Image (cartoon, rainbow, N blue to C red; front, side, top):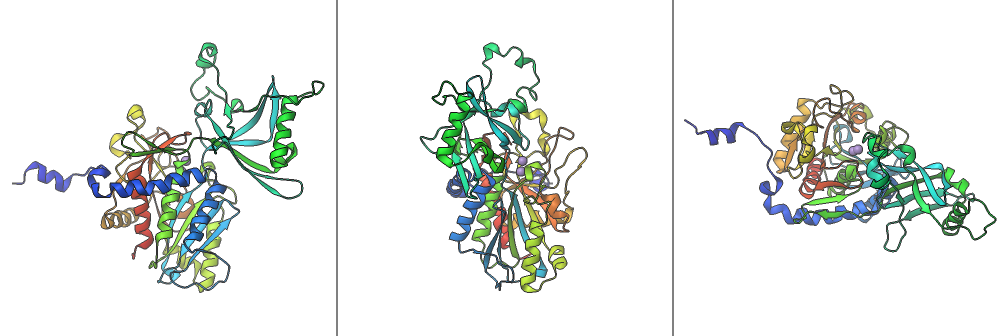
Length: 464
Ligand code: MN
Ligand code: MN
């Protein structure tokens, strides 16, 4: 008769801690995440993430994709959509009709966008009005240093880039909050209502233009400084995209340095790992497609979101280069929809169902479905695609786990999986578990980031 321990080992399952599963890889885990933290600091907006990704691709020998170009197996090309999305491919040895291996992550993140007419003066302070982008808990964005990133077009057509609050010596900006002594009324608000959208006003100035006869002198002086530094006028904010993001840099978290803390790890943890996997892929069987997209956080809408045809058009153009039938290409393609999952938080365990949650340090999370209210708005990968992914991860020795986004009916969310699945591509969600997701300081485990990279690299190089 078998003893219980042996039988349990054979029949029962629990995802191991990554450090127990692969102690020999923990040094490599640390090294890999140095590049990751740099990626987080260099690319705090979708435009900056594209610029930095392009730089990494060019250094790795990628050429800009041009319609009609001759493509040979092993060739590496990239394409940029409106400075906010980047697509990269390594041409496979198999014909394109055999399908693509797609890794799709997003590079937009929750933040505060300046309104078209942001600058105003009130009671001796100059402030910027903002409109938040994506799902934020508004109270998390007050009383913390913010940096401003973006572009402004001037009357003469010149594009001015703004990036202030990041370097040592730069000024930073912030949203003020009430002192506890005077917060009696505010404390009666619910947490969701504690800080309101129209209260997310960024403090940007306090000194007046030196003419006591003038009105709105603090606004005027602030605008004068902006004009001196960037050559812009108030009217130019109408043709600008300026985003306020946390000024803090990515950092190791914990005495053991096992975690990374930083802004926009949803979904840069998947974008960086997908990009590294793409870059390091040489002579794959299937042509790869790494797509880093914009607008996921507001529903993948618009011409830089995956609801538009920009990725499909790239595939069409790629297919045209080799005379491949696009329907065949799509029908035989597979996609890892690379997005983060909610990591189980012991402090707020009530929001999770422990048996079906993802945990930091248990490896990359393979997620069959996301969505809300009875799987509404999810891709829900079929068992065959789950089998494909499990088999692939097991074969490569990737540390992985599974789970879903919190308790049933607790809330929910979606990813780009829907949009890619709607092209008829076999798609499953896979990514890094994140603590404090959508906050100014999200936390991931380095071992999970590393194993996510290994999952994407395995998929890019996979011969099946
Ligand atoms: Mn995401
Ligand atoms: Mn998100």
